[in-house]
Length: 133
Image (cartoon, rainbow, N blue to C red; front, side):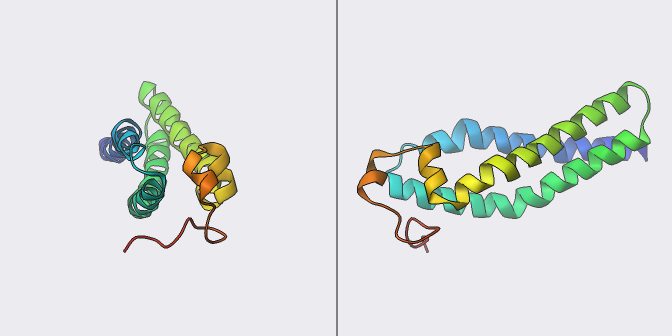
């Protein structure tokens, strides 16, 4: 059982970390090359897709790492505990810092201002216009 928990935590945590790294290193830099309104639409679509996958995967990573921490002893317990803390911190940062920025245009502008944005303010209270089809 211990090996299964460690394996599951490694696979789920590793794939989550891989998605985050790919998003940070490849996807977002490519999206920053788009015109601002196209970037906003692409970000919305990307976050909807990632939200369907990463929300349950993040919770599963914390749960599996916590279970592995409880089931193991010695250095494996220490490493599983550190992993649990890292994934829990990742969730806290997402909920406390990242999600409010995406939900509120004023915070989003303060986070990453754009010259085009000053010329074309948001069309709705929580949107930069209609979502792409």
